[in-house]
Image 1 (cartoon, rainbow, N blue to C red):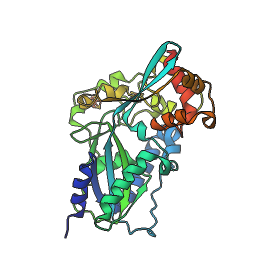
Image 2: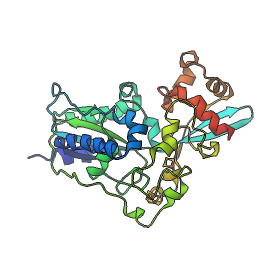
Image 3: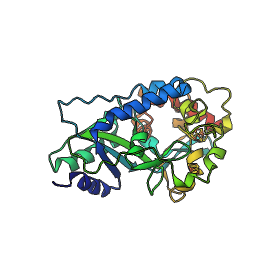
Image 4: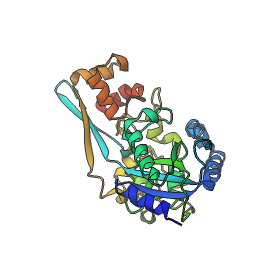
Length: 313
Ligand code: SF4
Ligand code: SF4
């Protein structure tokens, strides 16, 4: 039989991506794993249940007969964005995956995600296979498929590489070859290291359990709308969205940490308009395009608050 899956992986690597392909039968286990986590850790259910409940494990077989799950890892830089107020220019950063940040509802309009999907579809089409992008938990899938390994900070590190990757999952009618499905793994580097734990300003990474205390994590707070908790000190904020403190310190990311990419710059007028919460539709097209380049259309309402706390600190 032809090695469809390994040929796919080789082709996708020509684009700089990494991939792993496992049997579709694991879909149910992925779902059960999330349900178990919600039951075991009540705080996880309370704090991130609304995200976990959005996962959709059902795949209609009208379009294809599902045989495999493809997990794709696309390298991403740390993004730097400039804002200006008067004579002062502020450089702020965003963690790697946020340039491709999108809800499942919005991702069909997200240019860069569509480009990745087109690459996946194009490679599969050489052998007349198809794929559908699915919204299921990427990190546990990447780890259990053998593509990555967890760090103590609960981030997925692509094996031999870094955590600076965006993950996407597709279901396909392409057959799998070597089902690498296994147990959760933690990086060897973590055995004698606690740098992320010490560098986490909020104490979200704790000694008492592997799962990060979601209620303390800055990421969950600045990805959500509303006022920040009073316990979250302004000086702890370090990114326009998300938080880099546990990744920036990690020895496993050492070789990538210098790859910061300047994405765009907002002038004084634009920065003031953003801080004044000017509705998106009232902004000129040039400003809209800049917001699009940093993937802040869908989450635009978060931007004035997140920016303000960074430039005021
Ligand atoms: S900082 Fe150390 S303990 Fe934390 S994820 Fe990286 S290697 Fe593991
Ligand atoms: S993302 Fe930030 S707040 Fe969350 S665990 Fe890492 S360092 Fe702590």
